[in-house]
Length: 402
Image (cartoon, rainbow, N blue to C red; front, top):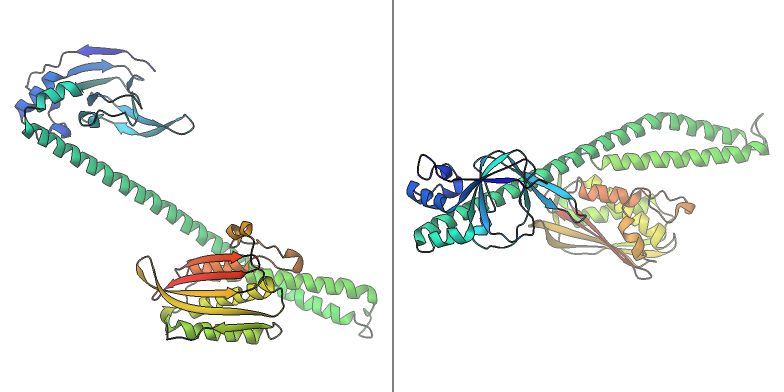
């Protein structure tokens, strides 16, 4: 950095002309601005000059009369992060007039500049006898700080909005890709499954020219793997379906959960799983029944397969009123008393394809479907708590009205 600074006189043709149009001194009279100007100095600096260094003791206010300066801050790695620019008429270092604390950023001349500098001690000697001047300064500083705070909040909100919109667009693109892939694979896989089943039938003893034992094993292998591929496509389709909107229905959440549990039991008569939906008053809910059924189906299947390993077990479903983002909501809890989940696995449970039972044929998509459905069309929150040997508690919080 260069440090060439050339002093110049502060006088101008019009009293106080140097500070005319400067927001910080806008409330001052021409005479008051002239008095302030007389206490400071004007200097010129070449591009690259360090005008103010981060961490140094603040002792002066600067007004940029000509040129542009860069405002930078140091990051935790020692590098410089561009904070912004100041242009003609802007002030920097104004907080020095009040607290004389450390500089929060460095200011570097981006072009040749002409700067008015007002030392804190000289300014205080001017305004100390005049409470009116002090009040004007404090009022303008407060307004400037408020404007900066509002701008920072607005820019942060805009940044978060852009990130959210980008993430939403990415999720939509993924959903469209998954939906398209599932649609394109369904037909050829269906044909292959039918052909494999027919081949398996022909390979059975006494069923035709292909009835040989050598064909039975590869036919069974082909049939099993095609079935697995179909299940994967169906799981992908379920993830994509999480983003689809269904007709909203006004219903009793407790009764809807009981119906979903009964449907699961009918679809899986071979599972020795006792499902209890706790009795209680109606829970009015305006929501999507298919999405709720999908969530409960996957949670019950997870409890049966992982909590109890396919053996006998019990699952309890309860409901209680709560709030979500300050609006009335229901907390639906699904609890089992199975083997539980190690703490190290909890952060990855909702990741697609995460499973500790791949060797038993599990694909690791069930909780990904649950998470996407709860946080997507159900506009809710998902929480999973588990202790090895003591079971698992899954909490689903959804608004009472979507």
